[in-house]
Image 1: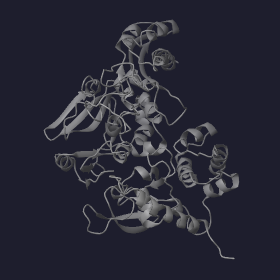
Image 2 (image 1 turned 135 degrees about the vertical axis):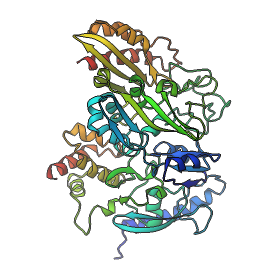
Image 3 (image 1 turned 60 degrees about the horizontal axis):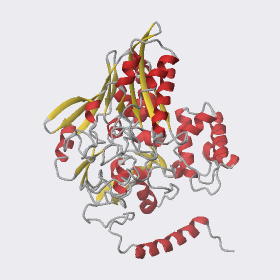
Image 4 (image 1 turned 90 degrees about the vertical axis):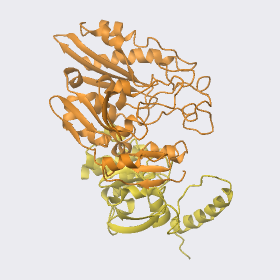
Length: 324
Length: 196
């Protein structure tokens, strides 16, 4: 771990001011950043501790849910209003990491965790995300866990967050604060595709931070599910995951929301599946037709072609769960 | 016959190993900081931690983890370092009553919070019911992961995640046992939960 100065501001304004120094980095729960610091993947000279700035409230009413960026994952998951109105978010949180990590990890930090790509995590290898222009050994290397959607010649690493997949399906908005004030963006616009700049993962500007996430209340959100498929039953990242929200009336789908994890270089919305479900009956034949097009546009590498079929089947199963 | 305790023996072995590793690391550009920095050295922070009910003043490097502060500076070696990356759970402690990973916690960030380690689970010689249950059910082999398993189990019982063996296993998934003592660990937790 490289040396850094630790500042511990007591307010958001003070935190934003502290982050103006070159080489500054925010630390929230620290569960990912501490690993990156220990492995010299992140080498900030100034660490700005967000523990004392507040931002940890969880509020829900009839119209929306608001999760403060510093709310702990475990606190959001046990909140009765979140459980009632946004079950996919609860299920995504409870399928994440371990109980200890969830007690530490925050909503904002979860959205900004870095990829689990083994080449990114090992400074002995080249990586365009870590060292722009150094190359991507994953493309012709160990790529079983890599993305089949959204990759480029420069990077095929998946986004690892479960929470982000649920939030992407439910059209969440991300509130950002920087030295120039506040802005709100749809989560779909928050994450960038790698293209030829895989080291730039979000639209966050230097010194800007997530302060909250908001999600509308809706029938689809109330009837939402998160299905996570992985190599072992617990404490593992997704091979493929699917968040689904279904709004139905008299057995007819009025509105379907779907997003997938483990398959994309960012949380992956599935608009073509949503369109194939709209106005259709809640039945397996419809789910089968819709899920068959879930992996459209995928371009697998040598070892991860299985994710195409796994994604289709995960979509089918998630739709069954949401309609049960 | 002289009484040689396991801790004294381990302490001797560890310190001789440590000396060897310091020499072996002479060209390592990024040494891990584990011992206390000299007071007044650049970046050193004067902090105070509330550990097992005691206020403990410390001088730490900003990089010092709570785990290293506990083990290397305060001498509370019950909390174990396994992976040092948050994957194994051997370093589990309670902060304000919640189970967390001390290897992923910077010591300077947890001032003013109540830290409980395995040494603080009981006062005196009477075992905590979860400790007694691990002993009764033989919930360990080598014992290295055991303090973390017990700290996690105490929290899990308080959280109420003991409605089935499957639930216990899922909510203990952050604690790895390389010996594979899981069946007895689950039995110990089930037993302790029923008695609590």
